[in-house]
Amino acid sequence: MKKLGVLAVSFILAVPTFAQQLDDCMSLDYLNKHLRKEHPRLVYTPELVEQLQQKVKTDPVIGNMYAAIQLNAEKIYKLPLSKRKLTGRRLLGVSRETLYRMNMLGVVYLVEGDARALDRINDELLAVSTFENWNPKHFLDVAEMSLAVSLALDWTAGALPESTVKIASQALLDKGLLADGKPKARIVSGDNNWNQVCNGGMIAASITLADTHPELAASTIQRALAALPNALKAYMPNGVYPEGSTYWGYATRYSITTAAMLESAFGHDFGHQAFPGFMESAVFRLLCTAPSGLYYNYADCGDKRSSNGDVALAWFAAKTGNQSFFEKERFLRDPKAMGTLSRLTGAGMAWLSQYEEQSEEKVPTAWKGDGSNPIVIFTGGNDDGHHYYFGGKGGKATTSHGNMDAGSFVFELNGVRWVVDPGNQSYHALEKTGFNLWDRKQNSDRWTLLNKNNFGHSTITVNGELFVNEGFAPLVDFKGGKKPMASFDLTAVYGPNLKQALRTFTKDSPVSLLIEDELKLSEQTETIVWQLVTTAEVKLVAGGAVLRSDDQVLKVENLSHPQTGMSVVALDPPPMELDRIIPGLKRLELTIPATAASDGSIRIRVRLTAPE
Image 1 (cartoon, one colour):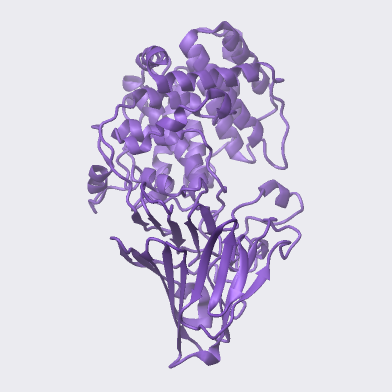
Image 2 (tube, rainbow, N blue to C red; image 1 turned 60 degrees about the vertical axis):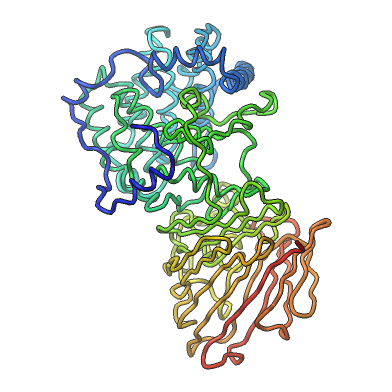
């Protein structure tokens, strides 16, 4: 594919008649004709290995990243071999550790032909191949282990003892490709990260075993290519990943690794780059990191990004030539300071070595993304001394990894995250108590958690009730420019408690955010609570409140109801023992009774502002 900037890609993806599927040309005949015969053929080719070997010596970024990989490999040599130990219902930690080890050791072997790395890869392969199974009950575990073993076999092809290759290949067949007996529904038809990860792992195993099991390989790849669009559609139409930035990192790393493996093995990525919204998602990823380094952490997202360079974005940089996606300064950090690298960094070295700068298209300062979990982001741009950042959203709670957070937002100014999202917490810590985290019915356990329900988010709660779990809040208006604005229709999340709810966010100055809520009351409306969740110190004052963090302040101006005082509810400690503890967390509230309505409607206007 010709290298294109984001704007050009956006133009292509805007064509409304674009087929929402990957190229469907895989067959036994196609595989036999087009599969690369020589190795490596997963992510790397012999030509890419030669290029990497040269750039390690001549390119400062590649050389620095390789030094970090070498340090990681040295640590691996000192670790015991992996053992089959489940954490709760998951073997995932072991699978991911194996994938990490194979990436680090594998690249050291590709670059140097290092005998010590080869010996350790041999031992690691034998260890995991003798596991009873790779835990097919939680198929992510199988997928990540399958990718790990596939990369190890491919990147060392012809160098390992024949006995090891036989044992590992048989394990990859029995515990990988054939592990589920028949296709699992969530792998084939699922619309979340499971689809991308599981199908990616099976494609890797299929390419690895294609020489000895061509029919199984062709049919598995064909099945995967038919299934993947069910997940890739999540990026449509503008690149928003519904599960948030952390899961973008997880799912997209698998998608780009899958695309890279298909390209290296067959010379064709089967349409990944051309899938609507996929390439634009790199902009989403960039914009979901605020100036503070914190994520816009909606859904089950982590709080803060790594200080290291993003190898997933490097793939987009390699494909577009856009400098904005190539985090050069982060890749040039002191290798010792990088610590443990992400588990696909070895594959990522191929993308880093393919990058050639062609343009630097600036990331927009006002951006919207539609889809199943629509969001908007306003920033002050690279030269903004106030480090303005706002992220707001609509969507619905039953989106994968979703929360009851329609209408919620985060807000940063002058280096402070004033308005926070309570973020995610350990799945296993909850599950081991018997807590049913994954049931998303209206009255499920999930919605009792503060970081999952609407009481823990900066939105509006009516009658003290939960949001309607299936209520969808679309983005209904958006304008860019110096004073960008966006409106979400929140009506559906309130059910019979409101007739209509429209929330509008406006960046009305370089140091302020205006939040306007237009509400039409129903016969059931009793109490409306406007909420702002923060960890800052709060001082209630006439007409609003003042937030303080060290020497920074933010005014909360109650423009519409200045005579109605606000109140503060402490959320540290949180309401439930199982809730995540966030030091200093509190909820600033503005409570308005239905009796205050005029003509059956209420308009709430609150402005957040800091001194210029």
